Length: 110
Image 1 (cartoon, one colour):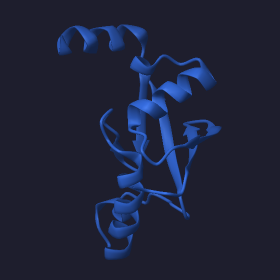
Image 2: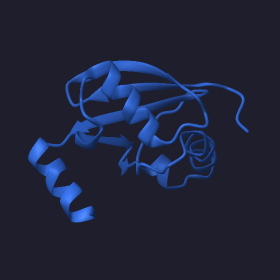
Image 3: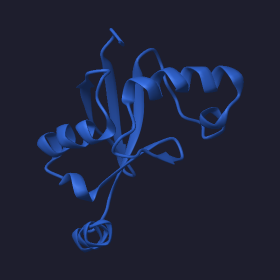
Image 4: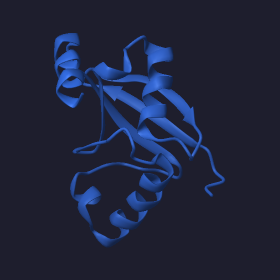
């Protein structure tokens, strides 16, 4: 239901890592799969942040993009986190878990 493609600008703590073109129907887990292919970081070790909020694997990127515009216009939570969004660009931060932490989370969730 979203026609415009999204551009994901992905940064690490040290600066820009890459840009990924995303379908607006993607969920955060789809972005992680694309980032694994692009950067070689396993999906289980990735934490994606939009401003100060960690994205859950089921978060819908197209809806986040629309709600970010709405929240920023109304002074909501995302504006308070100082996320930047221009057009259909999502500025994400990628943090990497250790493989041991990823394994522990997998064990706890199963």
